[in-house]
Image 1 (cartoon, helix red, strand yellow):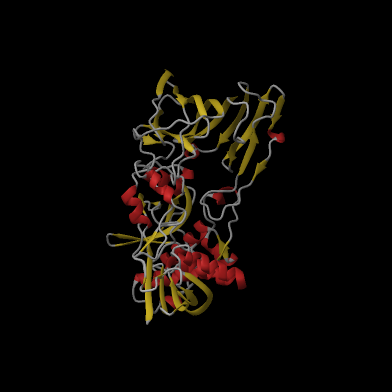
Image 2 (cartoon, helix red, strand yellow):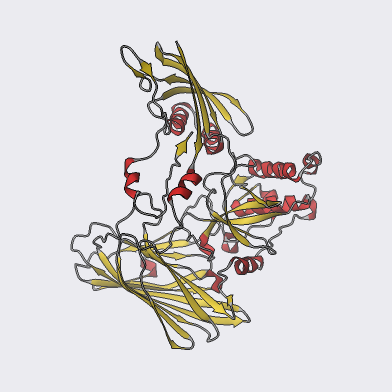
Length: 541
């Protein structure tokens, strides 16, 4: 007797998350299990704001933190980090303990190597707890930074692996500027006090912040609390905390409608002249950019946050995410299609309408068709038009439209199954089955990359891994590429169902479910209401 097993698998990441999660960082009165901390911090931050000209501001930011060691034998190696980018020069870093002082020259730094980021090009200084510090003893670290523009005012995050005796933020500001505070507790609500010693001074203080046990699959375990400061003047945020204010500020750094130089304006004219609809034209432009330009991030100075001109990208043959998006927008504009760039939030961004520069780490494109907004990602080399990589889906996107700036959630497009498998075999020879595997979406992208970069056993292991990570007791070997279309890859493979088909002396039958679903400890999160984060998306029929 022959057996035919057809499996169609489609990611259910968006359905799963909407059913089991609420907005992240909403302050909820949930159960909080305290855990012992190895260190207690007393943080004093001071922000001095100066007006440089009409509606233009800069500020100095200083942090002095006293760290007390609470346990003699710490279970953790604690490292502290200070970020520096092109817009905030860092001075006067010092670490002071009873054994001596260390200055900026003595503190190492790294330059992060990021795959794809909206703003980059900085350093991260790092240092540990001095070895001379014993239980109940303290050391102090402090630093100051000069920020060139108030729009770069960061949100303040407090780590969850320590406790805080107190956090005090003092803002010295023009008397017509009024600070407003939003405090987002990850695990619980912390009361805070705001005082106004003078018309040009505002002080916020939070006391006794305890660390909390981490939750399985919770993306914000590392934070106990985040603080956002919105500086209001006559009802307008001077640090650009709303979509319209931020987009207006960003338009002063770079054109929201990039243009090609005269010599490049006829690009793709021959390819596009036979396209009948704007969507067909967009597909042609999108495919040209994603398939013909290498991804290289050459972040220097303001090019860390604004794209180089499209004609420069054309001549170089490479660019980062914002430069690819800018190039698509410019070519589309030459052919009468209004494509906007869109900033995409990073994995640790606050789920709120408040805007801040480091909220975004990627740039894609958006096109409005009637009531629908169509997103497409020119950085995704193997993702066909009309589809999106899973890394974009569910994120918020700030559409850089000067007339209608807006923050919207990127929804999953209507997709084919991520993979389809047809297995045929005989019940008398379950180890000698044959399988045809068709890959779409992110699996298609991954397989395309693997074919380009891997061979032999490495390619075999890669293919086996991306497919079998979802299947229960089904073995596939000896993958051979059969065919490739615009948005799919088809492989054949040997299939072994001997562990999958349940066999006895009188019966042979297959289980109801061929898929691996989730780790058992995910069920430990059944009673809380905070969001789930899975590095590997759940699969289902």
